[in-house]
Length: 455
Image (cartoon, rainbow, N blue to C red; front, top):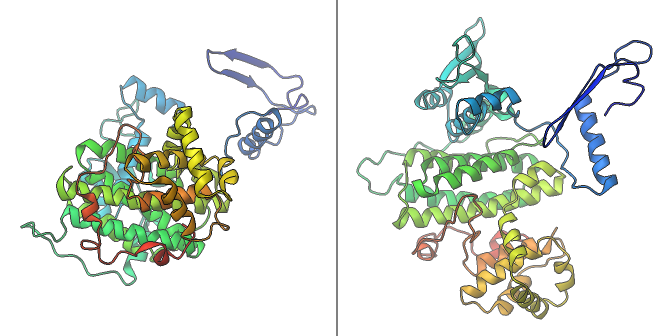
């Protein structure tokens, strides 16, 4: 925002459109010098946040400088002219992100990029050591007909070569022995087995994010993004787009100013690697059931990431990791009699907490979950009382979110019955309860005693 003194005596023009205006001004101070415009963008954003608060407008979460660079207006117009749904920068970011998921070496990473038909340029020092890389889409050209290359760091901060190498250095410490290939399909390395392992690794990661050091938790959250990318890459056709959307949304939550200490996240990175190596999964039978199981556990991991970011004050990341949003919207849309019924259940089951929960934004997500549990044939009053009594709730940031998590586990509901994803519904395939039983997952923690936390 410019003050009158800053634009005094300057030429100013204003043009308008249907949904925005352009203001162009030559900034000159009263003594004829240029004003101090250092970090003017950040300062303008801070001023906008104050105006939003002062006028009671919708308050946008402040940026923290860790987001991926957005496409420029020129890139967006170019994509529109070419009939692309996304800009070249966005397509490259997703492709590179999927290529790095579970990769263990530069050679493997660059082989994946080449396999995705990207053009690659490597930057080397005089000694021959590799310093960085650039990628381009084969059909994205400038006015001279040359490919438009983007450095990894300009796609996303964690896609620069040095940041990618940090993941590999973690793998090198105590890395597990490579798995054997299974060309005859005896189960080793099959999609269903990889998904079971993914669910187990995700569950263990939930405990780390809830109780581990910040740097270790940050590493697990970043690795969770790799697992989502790998799962999307190998998913059956009817869920692939939804999973890709989920991975793209969570991508923002995988970065923060808390520097991740890699190595402790090996189990998640190995899970991502196993998913990629196991190949595409079918959308039925064991593949479908174990995919639903992995999605459920990843939902809990994303929820844990949300709480972690919220406690650290990471507004942008917490918003990107908001898996309860779909449940919240469903709860807001419940008809009044049904919402009143869930309110009665709440007051009967946990009278001492009812008023606090009803005042929380998460109440609507809890109401939707109670409706799901009722539809599944559960006594919701007894179920909610059981969930509330499992462990103390005094340390919970939001009691409603914790109860949603507990209820969906106790009632064996899918992580989000509206399917957290954007374009459709992902239902629990038949047989999934059998798959997640003790007989098929003997090493999973049992109940909250194993979790040892509020959730």
